[in-house]
Image (cartoon, rainbow, N blue to C red; front, side, top):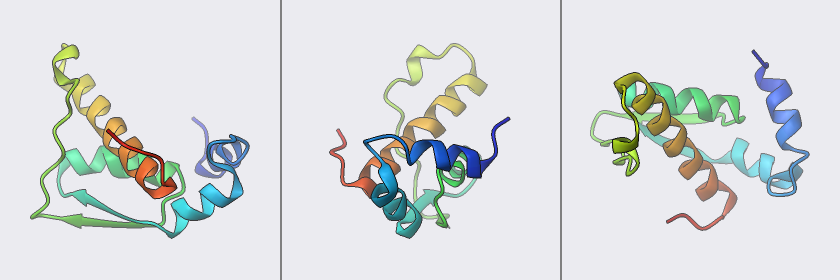
Length: 98
């Protein structure tokens, strides 16, 4: 498994992120749902270099619109966490989301 530092150093090389984008990710505050839905999302965000994650019991996890494409619940949860993390990262980078 790749360390967070290695992952971050690689994504800085991406033209879509770069050093400026990585700084935005580090400075952003990510609001995530508490519980297992938020745990997977938090894992992805931390690996992307997010430093501030706020978990909220009042916040509901955003519905994962592709959930029906996953046969098993564990796969569905991982997919949902990755999708939600990507959505948050895109928002932090100022890239349009759906």
